[in-house]
Image (cartoon, rainbow, N blue to C red):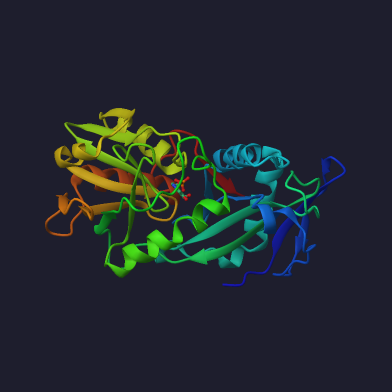
Length: 326
Ligand SMILES: Cc1ncc(COP(=O)(O)O)c(C=O)c1O
């Protein structure tokens, strides 16, 4: 949905300029901009929520600002200062306040920052000019029919990223690289692809555009890998799991271990938790089932409710994750 304003900032002559407000959805740039040819581009995704009290809360924007800096470092782009990022978020949310959905809708305002090379250059090297844009758009509740499980699929013919590659950064190329696999998974009736590590195809990486977690023996287990995006939702769930008295393990998780998990889920900004019904191993003709009745497990449900509660202001923000937009 088109909203009223977006925020822009340009990097030129070695420095970032002032934030600018625009009502234009389009931009003009040189046809030799490095973002178009060499993928000098990174983005972020975060949300603002309207609470029962009418206040608007943004979740963990410092972490998104820092992750964008990491992505810039990984693509040799100019890093945007954290304070400038936060200022842009606050400005965009305030200017588009009428688009923040009401509490009762379960919807939210999605915030999309993007940074890319605009310097014109045919040689493969980093640009000397960059642009940062931040726009917002309302998004509906992820679960239209309530908090529900969906099936995922392991397909060894596709990798999303390499062990020493770009998977740990939020860069556009990773998403282009996942489109064919995603389309095939959808065609086969799955909600998304479940990626294994590219080197050995032995360990779990992530699922679609989300991190993976499993629950067993009162333990929250999530993969440690150099080729997955460090999810801010996952980091939050690890903290909340500890608060709930669970043990937390971030380590390599072998595919066979799926058979021992009591609950499994995908986690990210889009859904908080997307509980997994089953994971089919397409190549080995095997199935790992986590839910027989479409219902998420009790620990996944507790974690989901707790995190959403903090985001909407129904639960106390005990970890200082929320910024209230005054
Ligand atoms: C590849 C990938 N993994 C994981 C995530 C989840 O990250 P976050 O919890 O920060 O949204 C995302 C979404 O941002 C993603 O694109």
